[in-house]
Amino acid sequence: SIIMLFTFIRVFDIPLITALLAFPLIYAYTTRSVTGGLASFFSIVITEVFALALVMFLARFFYVKIAVGGGSIWRSVMRIIYMLIWILPTLGIYIVMNFASDIVEIVLKSVEIPSSLAFLLALTYPFAFGFLIFYATFTQIENLSILALSFTSIIGYVALMFYAIRWMRLIIVKLSFSQFINRIHDVGEVSIKICSSWLGLVKKDLRVASRSPAYASVFTLPSIQMIVVVLTLSGGKIAELGLPYVLGVIATASLLTLLIPPTLFSVEVVASAYTRSLPISRRTLVGSKAILTTLIYITSLIVLLVITLILDVMNILLPALGAIQIPAVSAASIVELLILARKPLGQVLVAANLYTRISNLILVIIPGITVAILPIVATIIAFILTQQLIIPVFLLTTLLEFILALCCLFSMKN
Image (cartoon, rainbow, N blue to C red; front, side):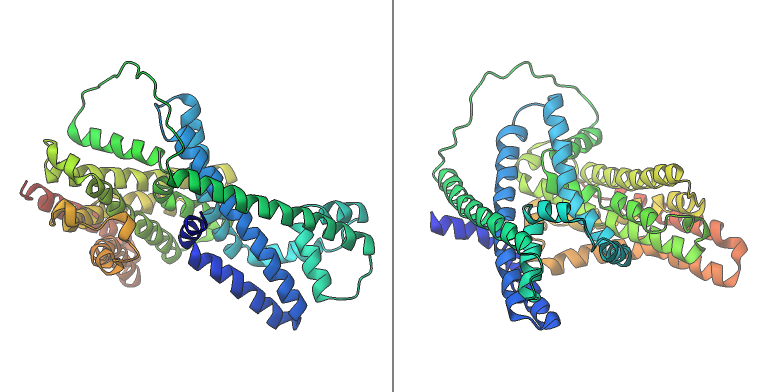
């Protein structure tokens, strides 16, 4: 069971070790306090155990209760909640990076807290560990009651940590020896609706995404980027943005969208034996993935439009130029998928091997990025030479790329 537990931890070893060593060392160096660094190390150990237990609990609940079975309303709602849980850390990192100065100012203003609230925080995770690190760093103790409450609560959290470790070990043992028995029940009526092959592939990808939060989170990257842009530049700043910054926002959204086609195609690789057995041509496969990628980009533009209308910070350049960029994004996704489709399905890059075969992924993404960025570069050149030809140059370049990509797609041999 210990071997199984460490095998599970091995999945997260790099971020765990980085957090466990980097922060305490940096904290001890900046504060010149060895005891403060040790206290932060102790706090991070407990936090990481809680994080691993939470990951295991959410994963077990998802695959036992939600991922299996039909498409009931309850399961659909829970899948959406899991997708939000998966993408919230990404959105939080963006917000922290963009609002770092504001967050520091808020923290500095809230240093002086009422004594009653301080007693409550001393019992609450993670504030109890914050008091511990504070008292370990600055050894002058002014309030022994808060320190005593902090130590008392930490003893309880340490006991909870040992229980979490024991629980994770038991769960991993049960999973390893298949002691979780799936419930067997009669399958109800199966409804089969006939539709075109490309539409069926699009629906299939959306249903696969609804059963995998990690897979669905990739779809939301362009929308998250649009949300962050609006939140970062709220308060009337968006309306004052110039053309270069707007093109930069559109370029970033395009680049994030172009990470999706390799992921979509890798799903077919995992089930390549099943995919090859269907009467589906490579042209249809590439076309369906390109359509879904384009729809994801359009969704990000709709999110941008809705948020700017709600916050009343509309800048007509963002949705207008973003809409003109749609043919270029579609052409770039077709280019990426055509590169992937040249190889047999069994040899195409799989999503699980992105980190071990990153060079192959770069060779696929760079041509797509070039196609997507070319209209933006042409528009910037037109902006430098004459501002009257900005929209025609942008529109003609994106349409020309889209037409050429369609010609390559329809000339593709099945």
